[in-house]
Image 1 (tube, rainbow, N blue to C red):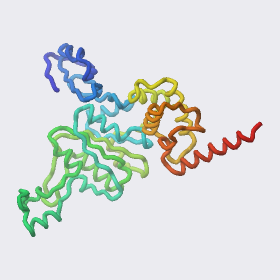
Image 2: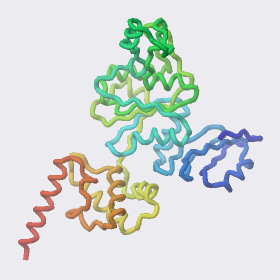
Image 3: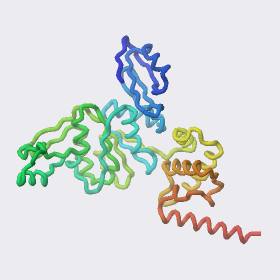
Image 4: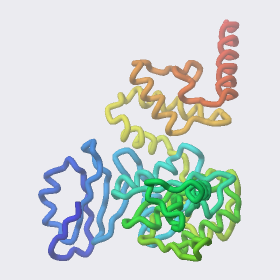
Length: 333
């Protein structure tokens, strides 16, 4: 919902929740502002407004650290790609989806892989279908074998560029691609256009998308690529930050359960597992504990170990360590 309002306000913040009717009724006292209401749950995404400019301020399911909030909004305003690094489970990918949800935008996702080519992320031609139509006819499909565009399959970048409204474009795990592919993609995104080689026609973005790029640092990114991005490393949340994150998902969790679980969780992370438990595993584990009514006691006897540890080697290592401690204590006097 966008509502033009009279007057002018140099700098104002408005925090909107869909269930807060009192706030919405008083909106007319805030000149030159608009409201977007996004969540069907009654807990709407949080959006700030500065003058006429929209700002992302986290959502009811995503904790946004101040430094990350600042660079996200600067990337949106300056139309720069934002590269997010950090270990798996720190919310890099989820951030793009939460921006999309909060700002009421569609999202296009490019899942990077080692075999991907820059062109196919923009468009591809279904040559097999075109050949079949040329041989056997297109029937009642309405396709014209002479029309190239009737056989184009638009990739995520192509769809984002052709969208009438501004979208969020997520390039997920870009470090899986080769460096030349990374640079080619950045050329396209920087210029907001690409060329259809078969026709020598340029597809220009209607609206520059909000570009979020994630990397797990499995492969070094090229200097030219890094130079053209805003970059932010999402560190693993501290215990204080994790309390806030958990509070968004389990607002009524008992304090004793939360404190005990976090203590065990961070102790397990410190053991050097191949895949240490991350935020997603913690949230699922807390859900399992609440459903079962169990209270974890120590790292030696963790309920639902398979919710926290996913690699077979990690689970085996955990069990062997627990078994060794059990034998040691049984021989002590």
